[in-house]
Image (cartoon, rainbow, N blue to C red):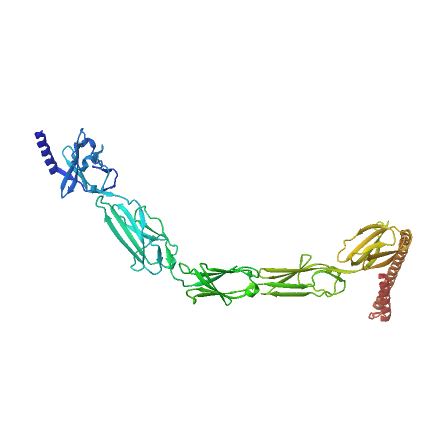
Length: 566
């Protein structure tokens, strides 16, 4: 046993003389989890290793031995301190340390002995721990404009290394500027665990624009951030405004609501309302309502702060109103030819838009009834608009007159078998039409604008006189027309046709005779001219026929020619 120990010591001395040390390779372990420290990262094959030994640096160069393993033997634990129950080694010669803690942040060395060489692989170990969460504590109840106020503390507990904290406003990082932003950081190390708690305190001078802003803190490089917070920003009133409802148009009969809006925070709770010289003070509200306003409510309105009456707002309010009067109205009955005078009165708060309709059809202008006709009858409506107020007035006009026959005429049918008598009448109420002869009624036109047309069919066998009579409650009228028998008209038609034929033959004969006479005279004139020219050639004299004879001959030819044309 002693010889083995002496031999072992000699081997260790030899190893110390021949050892080859590699550079430090740091690894990071997580607090509370299994820590695995590799030995040689596969640089030496497992079958070539004779002895593997792990040790650590206790400090001041003093080593602490943990375990050793010889080839084909089990691991032997050498540690006598708290590592005795925490260390083991896997098949790749890696050192395993359970429940890593901050005290494990040191240098561990793996010693490997091969056939004739000794190698050392030191590893520097760091232990990290994330803070459990980020919390903001001690937050302010409110922030005052222009005053540096502690907003809150952002705390990251039990971390290693200590957390770095950044503050954010609306997702934009904040940096201390020595004026409106102050950030103070403190780090406290827990003696029992060695873990650190970081506290970052933000002091902030708020502005009015910070109303509704969201603040939070975040651990740099770590997926941890606090929940967002917003704060009440307090500031005194600088501006005041008077709002009116309804906003677009206030009509007579509406409710008028006045609202005094101040930009202070917290907002004032009491106001003065100046209602056309009358002062009304309200408490715990910012509104005042006037019910069922009249046109007299038009004027200037004000509101002000009760504790500072110099801060006020003013609005001029106009109440829209519209009154109309149409005379006459209702049902109006007039005689044709008379005049109707309309009286239109408008009382309004502004310029009125006026339109007219007759029987629901729009008119281009106001109707003028200087001389009424039947076509003027109908329902008239007058529409007046000011803003969003519309008023209407109407009347129903009836134009009456006695029944009158305007025309009476006859026509023979195309087949010549009967005659059509047409009686056109005018009047209102609608005239009743009657005939002095029995006939077949062909139809009656619609009664429009006081006019009606009545037609009958008759077959007269002798000449007769027919009367058309029209009647209404205001009068009657009658007109007569002579109607010949169809037999007589047929005889006269044939006689007219015979006379027309004889006249036609006479005209044709005259025209033919005139044409023949014109040709004979023209031929004679040609022969005469030719003989005259031949005589002058024979005597050598100039051609100089009787100009008077030629003139007479030409006039005769022209006269015959005109007769032929007739």
